[in-house]
Length: 224
Image (cartoon, rainbow, N blue to C red; front, side, top):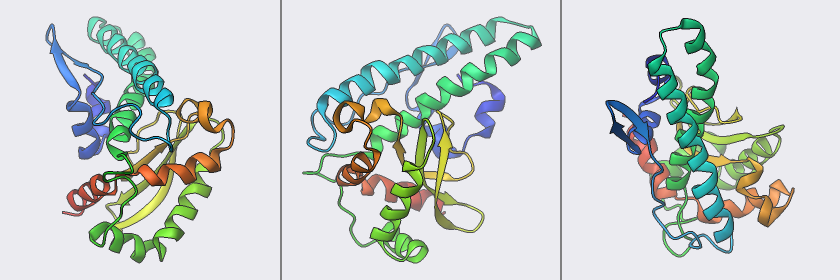
């Protein structure tokens, strides 16, 4: 489970992503690694099967394990000091679990839905808020590549002004200021084996496997 304060801080879409990959163990809601909706090599040549397997089985699993350990320790202590000390681990590992659970659904093979943006609510919103799809990609790539260290680039829906905006988060912080529509992992483990330190090449390539159909579903739901 996520602590009460952490759960309340998350947007509904983010909470659902977490809940979908959680289970009950000894009365405690624990996180579990969600299966990928495609084969590890299905995103090639844009993202290699080796990267996807390591990213999913090793990195995401590490966040799941870390979150469960922190939540179990939190549930067993009555010390406020210890609970406060555990918040950093819950935020980091919980954010990593939430972000990656969203990320896998953000992607699709290029011979299926990957990279295909048809006319509809999402495309219309992008053209309204950015001028064109290419303008969005250019702004998104530049903003995300500029992240110092590790983090995430997001296309988020601002529920206040009802607009799509490009934003970033550091480390594994989940996006809570906006509803996440598209998220891209810019940690080195997401691309280094294939693209080395050339972030722009990775960012240009990933648009070929972005699941715009899934992104549109998120936007439609967020716009209600």
